Length: 327
Ligand SMILES: NC(=O)C1=CN([C@@H]2O[C@H](COP(=O)(O)OP(=O)(O)OC[C@H]3O[C@@H](n4cnc5c(N)ncnc54)[C@H](O)[C@@H]3O)[C@@H](O)[C@H]2O)C=CC1
Ligand SMILES: O=C(CO)COP(=O)(O)O
Image (cartoon, rainbow, N blue to C red):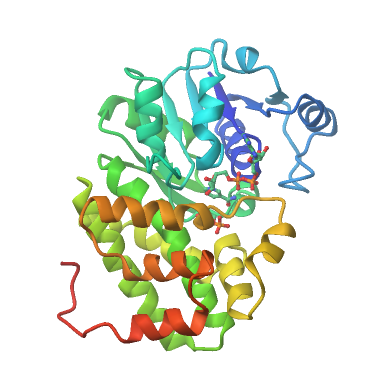
């Protein structure tokens, strides 16, 4: 079977390698023809995932029609701020799994909402979990969820992409999964900042746990479930991203905590740090739903330069104490 992977960043490339490892014909679409040709010829993605050789059943193309023709499954793996733009230029899509994690600025849509509005009627789901691209590409053990309200589709997709080392669990709460995946990037920036500023491991553990509570509040308000947030796509990904030095969101927070300027940190990066755009978008989405997200608000304010790190910490610590829980 043919699987088309839309977006040739680190994660799209890792998922293409995974689809190929699972025995499918993987076709990876990159928007830049020169880059696509180079990847196809050199047999690796030197820019985003160096050192991971492509097997013969992985092709790369910049021709979206050729990538999607005859594909039984598509994976959308472009950064969430660019998803609508890329989707607008694609031909007809087969059943699709979305693997981006974020909230779109301006419209405040989650990736699945963008897809459902632009491509109504196509079976769709979300693939999300604690997965650094490099480790999945290397075939190290990992797990994630495939979430969709379409049971037949999710089970088929999870079965198709699973191997002994990449375990995909079926899940029927795509809203909870998407909220967890997007929000953990914002909490990871805060966790990095706490460590970078030398505030200690106790502070990080407290922040991550309260972060989980605010993620659960939003998930439930948007129609998802709190138990989803306690699973792989919520707690699992939060753990990875708030502790793993390989996380771009954590490392951005770490640098902010060390008093580096946001513009300087971003200028050095060629890969996406989703939490930067997602923080204000998620905060606005939460406000619309009447949900309080104090850590997300603090991250947003720091990123916007409205408050410094010390001021943000002071405002979090000054919050009234109350009952533990998500309400
Ligand atoms: N890298 C990872 O370990 C994981 C990433 N993700 C998610 O996957 C999504 C993609 O991230 P990565 O593959 O890491 O990206 P990346 O940072 O490796 O590469 C960025 C990609 O975005 C593309 N891009 C940049 N500007 C664009 C534009 N204007 N229009 C269309 N495409 C554009 C680039 O060509 C490149 O393919 C993100 O939502 C990320 O949160 C999810 C799980 C793991
Ligand atoms: O989503 C990820 C891991 O699950 C990747 O995290 P970063 O974008 O912070 O590197």
